[in-house]
Image 1 (cartoon, rainbow, N blue to C red):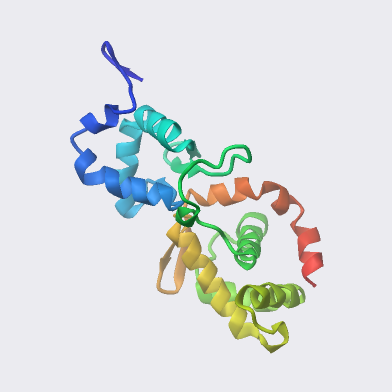
Image 2: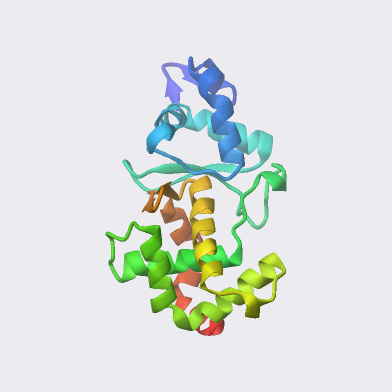
Length: 216
């Protein structure tokens, strides 16, 4: 991107009048795996990235060896740092990256199936999500108990529906941290960046019936 005869450089974003106010917050969020989109308090951060996109791409590529990537189309576009190149994990410390537990990924698959496949697009109640999982996914609960037990070093036979209820809320909280959902008390809303979950786990989502069978 060029402005008149000036050429975009790594340092170009420093010339933006909002850099002092916004860049540090953006940098911390991106390095922590947060997806930035036109949502709530992120709108100013999103607009800043749009204005300085090419310079910021150079900054993260040259200094940290990771790509500033985007997904979706306006107005659902979102930005994130892509740590998933198997040949180049970048040099941002691993403790800054966000890793989902296996049981949270399974819960994500179930949310996807309910909302995108069963078309229950009005589902926004955490309590109702818990109820549906207890009833409609009864047969895979043993596998989820095993995942929770392994994650928390507990005996799966001692777990019950309350453990799954807690894990559903825990999964949604983790999704909220990285900008995939928004939570307001008992309500949740999928944000545009949930598209990243779908794209990243595309192969697993397509074979989720087999994965569910393994959990029985």
